[in-house]
Image 1 (tube, rainbow, N blue to C red):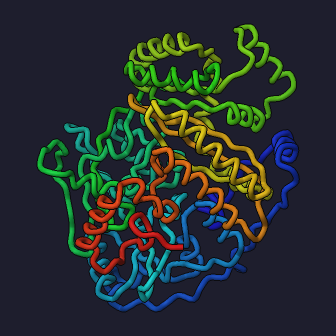
Image 2 (image 1 turned 120 degrees about the horizontal axis):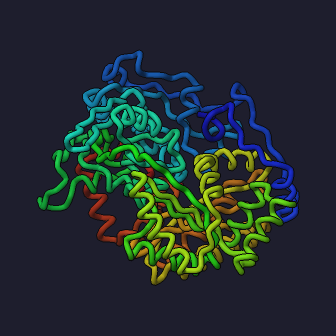
Image 3 (image 1 turned 90 degrees about the vertical axis):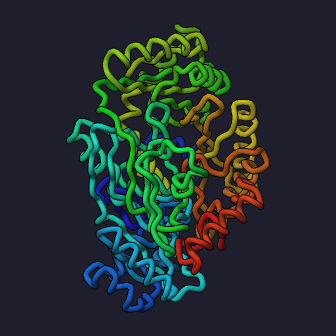
Length: 536
């Protein structure tokens, strides 16, 4: 993973000249930036750890080299990347600790609780909401507890349950399951680097969530080490015994303890995958046809509807110009359509199942006014489904501020939320003197509502990038809260959304969660400043 950006250091998602010219035309000139050499990056000097911490795992499992600390000095949020690219990282873990089993995790937590050392559980480091920022607070030091060595996989084929280590990255888990002819089917955009423990800790939602379920739907049983001791749920999740502890652990974001073991429901690897493109008449009509699909039980496994701005920008970024663009527009005119919104659909399963479900979905799509574009757009989406973060790196290097956020609401208030957040983003960007492009798509749908995922691009403000980001992010979050949407659908709360947790769960609910933290983590060592407490 790049220390200054996303993914493979050798990989780029380079923009073509057509896309660059479009950005210059719409946003004006931007000031390109260069990534400083890693040797020039300044980190705070590491504080010395108590001997008890290294004794818990052995000295060979405690790493203090600056390069290792830098890789775990944050996640991949816009502020995290700005800090890394600045060459002066203000906070970093004092050491990286790599346990190999649950017993070592428990020993580390006990030692850290006694010695007053903060612990940040670290998986793939893919958080985009400040979820792994190494905030030390009043503690004497802070460690990144890297779980990458905890990567076992055991399969119960009779029950179709897999027991997975929290440090398994998405591709590692899928490879291990594929050897048994199975799949988890959880493919968020962060799939290549995010881990099983991270999926559970953040209530992740994959791009095929309609077919496979969100990660919290997939968890069968789970184990967590806490400073007060271990918690483990039963192998069976089908119980009426009080509030589900599983639900308290899933989504806890490392603030209560460290997830050490996850059992998940798995399925047979699909024989057939079919992805298609459609054009909806407009965003409202597209959302309405998706609502019908969801409520009629005919929702494709993958459903992604872009609003007009995202559709326009996506086609421009893909370089669809000249004869190719003319042919596309002619195709739409022949079907009495002058424009509209791009809709990607996908079905996975046996050949017979895919054909049956696609036939039902296609009929509803056509009845809702959607026009088929065939399989080419769907295949293009599937080919580039993990490329977005690489594109963000490229845009930042070109001098642009680019960020994403997501929320969800009921169908009855879906468009109210859509308009409110879009208006809040545009207003904040204009107030900052950086009018930008604001795009949105629907990417997860349910019978009662759906999510909204915004992407916005504007010229950056050199020297004030984080202040610029904070003003725009605050405007969007306040619009979400005012409209009654959730502060996060699948990115989690982390540090960035913690100020809005009371609006999410209420004063009494927040007090109850804090009481739980006090019981499990009385010293407050677990991932300080996230979820239940906020820091500047």
